[in-house]
Amino acid sequence: MAVVLRLRRTGRKNLPCYRIVATDSRFPRDGRQLETLGHYDPLRKDPALQVQIDVERAQHWISVGARPSEIVASILRKRGVHAKAKPPRERKGRGKTTKTRATRDAERAARAKAKAARLFESRRSRRSAKKAAAAAGEKKDG
Image 1 (cartoon, rainbow, N blue to C red):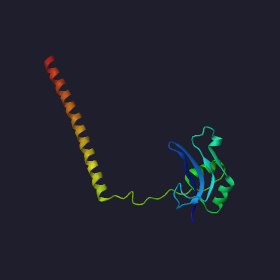
Image 2: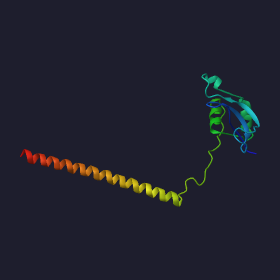
Image 3: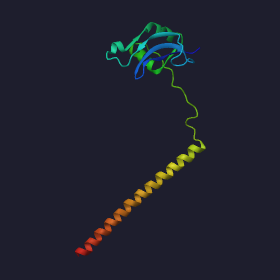
Image 4: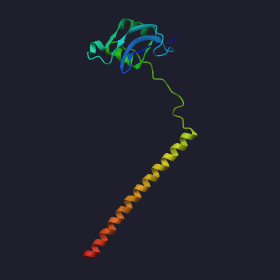
């Protein structure tokens, strides 16, 4: 059983409040928990009341192998408990270049190249039109 220390959301819509809990990593975020260690209320004005945590129990869980999430690790660091945070989850297959992705990227690059060529040509034609107008103006004056 891989124990993690993480936040469990409570509170109502648009008014978040969290409990800091020790739970099995396979349980859902707001599901079953092993122990409640404290709470975190990010909307409180007073920083002293924003976070309340039982540091001794958190240290106990860390000593038996629990890994805190990134946010819980930062909360614990502010309280003087240094624990290595759980590494971010690896998501395989998201960076793969598939046939569809390659086709889409090639089309996008071709459109960008065509647009740049059109802009270049329009600037070029405007310059030549200005030069022609300037030359015509000189001929009238001369």
